Image (cartoon, rainbow, N blue to C red):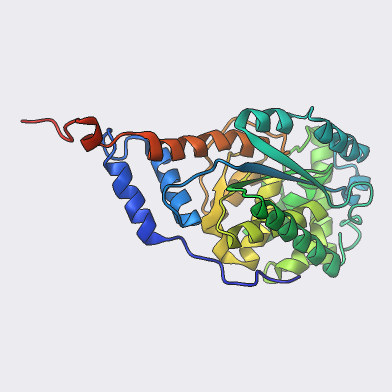
Length: 335
């Protein structure tokens, strides 16, 4: 896997100070729009431009199958991944609906549907070289989106069994016990949840993933769509574009990306916190506070599409509100 060909840019602190001054001059008490103001400043810092703009929005939804489904860890069979891919292309999935509402495009990428990973409970999910190629594919996809003017990248995924891989990655990179980061995924019962936890623990014992070697860990217990999302994060951060994480799976990709290149973290925006117990823990590990908490557990990029509305609001507040001077409003009440 090749690394980004230039160093990741740090947030532009000078522009961020200008952004805060602009926000403080608007017709409102200073800081009264709370996290919308912080979001506007973050966008300025990431993108290195005033004013911020997220006019061109895209959700990149990557899909792949997982061999670990052979262990009975999901409520749905692997064939559903391919069926949902057809639904995405037909425009009938939840992500299509929510992206249309947000004025965003959906780019669906097949990184291993019908093929997918080996069973990680019995050995590595992917050869290391194959995992690296998937990361590079993700970087290529985001580069193509930059070439057509994308301002902001939302992440999405589809892959039956991928909460099992995400839980394994979360345990390795956060240090939390497997049981603490493993949830019901598609809605499994108690017996299946217990089996899922046992399968993940077996996969960790068999593969011995090392968080100090992120590509080894990714290849051992990850998935092709997760690897592709790692590449999207790396490429978008290099291009100074905000990356809006969706749920637990995209968060697991962010853990790997941050282990490879810690400089990506300032470019990450957590759309929401899902019902997966590991999601909150990995967001805490990354130092990210989610914008929304709607008890979502679908994936696909649905949370990212919903968060786009807040990013748009932050940009519009910054650019469309009048200053005290422009509006002829006194900045402070007279005594």
